Image (cartoon, rainbow, N blue to C red):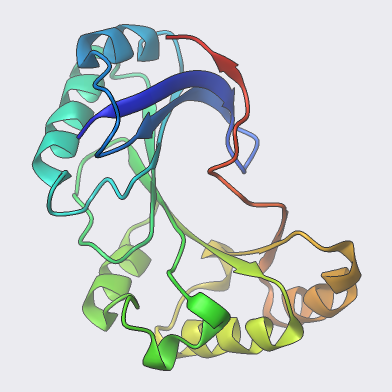
Length: 194
């Protein structure tokens, strides 16, 4: 696991914190430096490459444990595709972006396995963010939520096109999902602080 950049900014839920972008292929920024910077924030947000990927998991877990030890006041927020098994640590919240190309999860090779989806769903601090671009996407989100018995208060529907807002509101009102404008966690926001 390597750190590509460290910035301060807001995540998609409006929480201010230090955002640490993970990248398997970038130049390695010092972990100690990242932890020292993180010590000044209440929210420590890990995003970028999949933190729980087998090639990074052990290093990521070690990094998170070091953060928690140095910054026990902070919450660590891990953005994940949900494909890989989460790690159970206190002060860790998962934001899951299910991998759904064209939202046809029934034939998607990178779909979240049912047992992993159940584990994320049973964790109190997990949120599922679905990026939708057309009304058919909402039908697929409903299918996924029903199939995995996902709690509506954990579901966030993200949209980019205001023309979709009417159709999305219909679903969010009927099924009590949360609405999230432009929930792209991977865009460059905030100030570089490394």
